[in-house]
Length: 111
Image 1 (cartoon, helix red, strand yellow):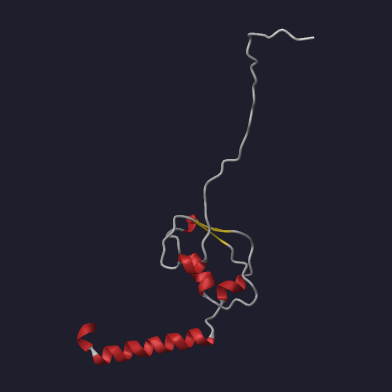
Image 2 (cartoon, one colour; image 1 turned 135 degrees about the vertical axis):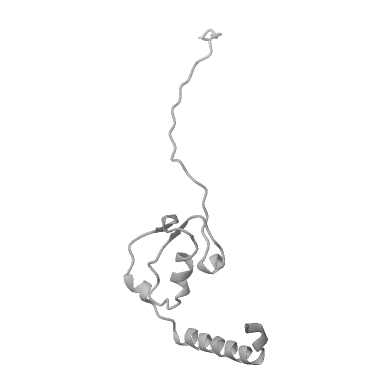
């Protein structure tokens, strides 16, 4: 009933295939501010309630070359025409006024 043991080793051939994966990660628009990135994939399909122009401008401006930018899917062209909201306009006006006041107060700095 017992089979005799063989001294020969069985050769087993296996073929496998895999997808070439590249490690990657994602970050938020806010996290990317101030950074220059090698390659960027951006999703310009924004939620309807988004009125933050930084949500579009910041990720689009993180790369040095257009060839390093990929847009994930089709998007509404209107997102590129987004205007600043009232609070953003007010902030810019306040910064402009601070600049004028600083220039008047310290003219020697602006020669």
